[in-house]
Amino acid sequence: GAGVSQSPSNKVTEKGKDVELRCDPISGHTALYWYRQSLGQGLEFLIYFQGNSAPDKSGLPSDRFSAERTGGSVSTLTIQRTQQEDSAVYLCASSFGMGDNSPLHFGNGTRLTVT
Amino acid sequence: DQQVKQNSPSLSVQEGRISILNCDYTNSMFDYFLWYKKYPAEGPTFLISISSIKDKNEDGRFTVFLNKSAKHLSLHIVPSQPGDSAVYFCAARKGGSQGNLIFGKGTKLSVKP
Image 1 (cartoon, rainbow over the protein chains, first blue to last red):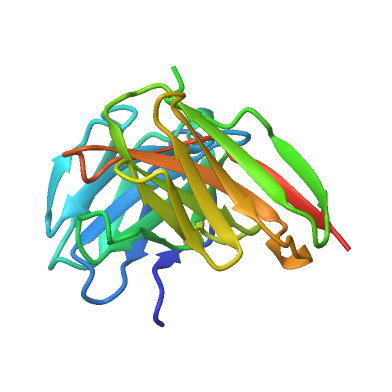
Image 2: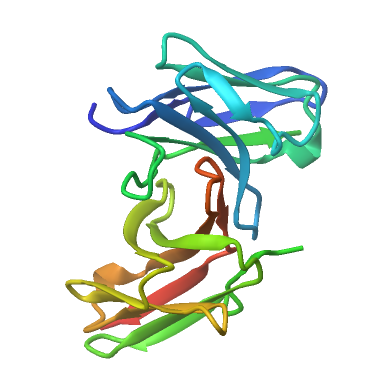
């Protein structure tokens, strides 16, 4: 497809389990971003990649969260030992570059529910 | 501590009239501002942006106004259409901080036929 693809679209997991969320950016986009939106909140920045490196990890909520990107394309966001407060919609976005004329293109998100 | 604030959670407008969505920010280092639109179960889509060197940017029915002294921006939609019904997010970026867009909590716009 032409857009950012995220999988799964929905994930229900038990507290304490690990989950892995996947993002396929738009082909040719060098920058990739992870955000999350909790109920009633705005979009919270988690991490971004320029190529395969992550210059800014400041948004990751705790050391249970990690992300990687390989081959300058697909990225995975891993949450270990999930907690109920991790329940949110996790959004991935990509952009052609990092400048002002490169708006973010978002996927439809993964809705994570931790029971 | 919210750096980008959208104080109106919702707005209802009659079709054909003007919709005005407001956004305030606190960080004077922000130099680029964007509006995104989000339909249910979809990701946000880019709508329009403005650099801090401008005070107005227009694209069809959408115009964004920036008042730097007041740290305020607004999105005007005219004429409003039922298909404009969505959640609108204001976002801002600090100069030199390319990777991190700071988003507001959004305003849900309902355009009634």
